[in-house]
Each structure stands twice: as C-alpha cells, then as structure tokens.
Length: 200
Image: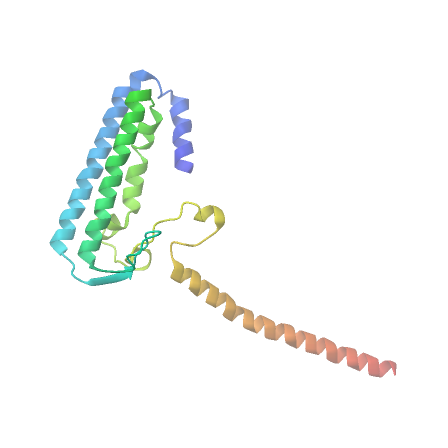
C-alpha cells in the first residue's frame, strides 16, 4: 500500500499525468510487461528441465470445491501455478490497456510498471527457480495464497506452523507463571495465618 500511495504522490508531484508523457510511460509499461512474460517462460523452461517427479498430495484449497484430496507431482504443480501467473499477467494487461486507451488513465500504467516486478520477485516460483532458494518454510508446497487483510486483522496465515509453534510456546511459558502465582498465593495465605496467630 505504501508503494501505491507513494507512487501516486510522485505522479501528481512530477506532473506525469500530462499527456505529453504518455508515450514514455507506455514504453516503460510495455518493456516491464515483456520482461515479466519472458521471465515466466524462462521459469517454465527451468521447471521442464528439472522435471521434479516428487509426489505431492494436498487438500484442494479452492473454496466450494468438492475435489477433495489432490495428488500430483512437484513439476505439474509448479507448471499449474505458473499458468495462473501468466493468465493473471495477461488479464492485468487487458484491464490496464482498456483503462488507458478508453479513459486516458495514466496512473495504472505507472503502477503496473512497478508492482508486477515486486510481485514477481516475491513469487515462490521465482524464488525457487531463479534465485535458487530451497522449498522450505514459506516456499514449501502447496503454497497458501496471501491474505491481503492479514496485516489489518493481525492474522498469521502465511505460516500456520509458526503460529502453532508460537501458541504452544505461549502455553508452555504460561505453566511456570501459574505455578509462581500459586506459590505467591500460598505464601500470602501462610503469612496471613501467622499474623492471625500473633493477634490471638
């Protein structure tokens, strides 16, 4: 969100909404889009070359789906996720192009010249195949779609295992605190009894 508002501020401040900048911004957007599409095909080549046949089994995360348990391989799973990324990219191009040429909007072109690069860098496929990171923790398949409202609600949906571990640690940490409290209460009771005996 900070990137979006920051970019919009810079656009207005620099006067980039002026039609005379349109050809430059179009060229920048077209170049970024071409780079992203080329990288997706490069990742596809890497997936096919590796052809990881490791079996992968998981529950269908699609809401309302009755498919149940899904059995596939890592290579097929990655190709499916890559296909989603490519379709999403083309859909975005269609929407942004329509908004620009139909209504003359410049801001979507500028935003989509920046955000897709950031999103691609954070993408699990890019992280694994291009950057060579191991498929562990948040990169472990199957990947859970990010919840855009997680930061607002405080929910930790990116790594449920970490959340469970944290809860367990909190529970364990709470036990000695209870014992300490009980000891304090017992000590207080004993002191009270001693004072009562002195008064008698």
